[in-house]
Image (cartoon, rainbow, N blue to C red; front, top):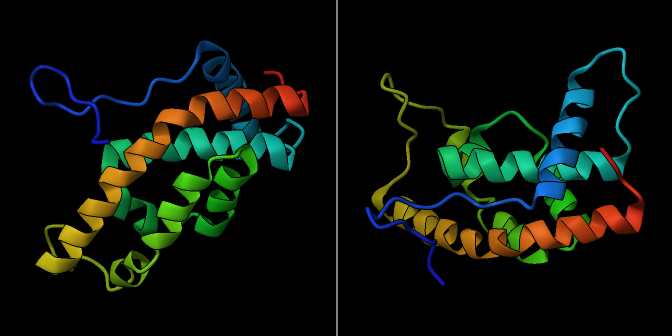
Length: 149
């Protein structure tokens, strides 16, 4: 299944269920508040998943590997909530990290060859299929773990 696009051909962003959006907002706010109690691993998984989906949709899959985050922890967060398809696709694209480590040119362009770009684009299209089920899986994960915003 290809990424959903609107009438103008612009890719649509993943829609989060209202319950997930409000919990994410509360957890994300707490995670940035220095006086707040640290998030549990389960709460952090929800923040990781929601932030990563928005980040990839806004900046592309290559940016996930270029960003200074703990990618393996984020992949584990997708697994924790039951989004194994997304975790598998992220792992499949891990070769991009070594390319991102090469750096970028003066215009900020990473040094991907045409073939590497095509390969990453194909993987990126598949990740959007996985994003479609994340909201439901995350809501179930919230219920199972008693997480509230």
